Length: 146
Image 1 (cartoon, rainbow, N blue to C red):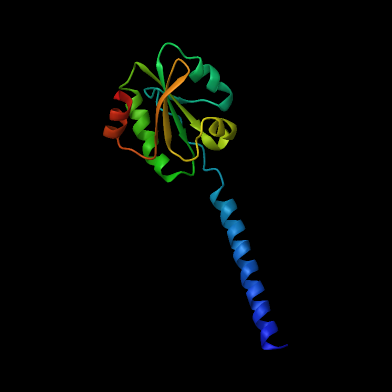
Image 2 (image 1 turned 90 degrees about the horizontal axis):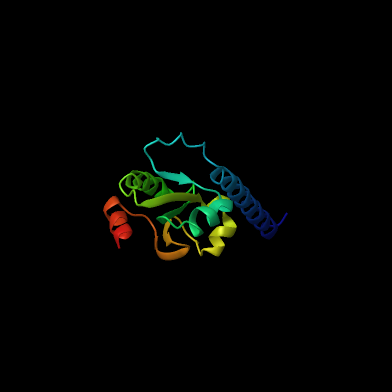
């Protein structure tokens, strides 16, 4: 076997190995983490499914609705979710809902949600404002009060 053939075979083996590692890493990282423990009764933010969006958000007339789009694999979402849950207890004149973007792909496309975390404020079916990216409690309160 010539050196050029040996080099080509080594290159092919390396490429195949990288593809296998990439596929394995994708399936390991994309695996849904274990379900979160039950949320405290004091938390006023609850999860809704894509099928509930129209009723819970678009047809809600009594309060402004904070809609939080997140994903379980999203690092910044892991820090912003507890902030939103805590803040929901302080803003009783708002309704807080969260939507797992991985389980609501069509809704994400419809609402132009292309990254997480993302917060939208709706009132009587109209989007008033949105915020993309992570935040601390002070920034969240400023956003809500805007």
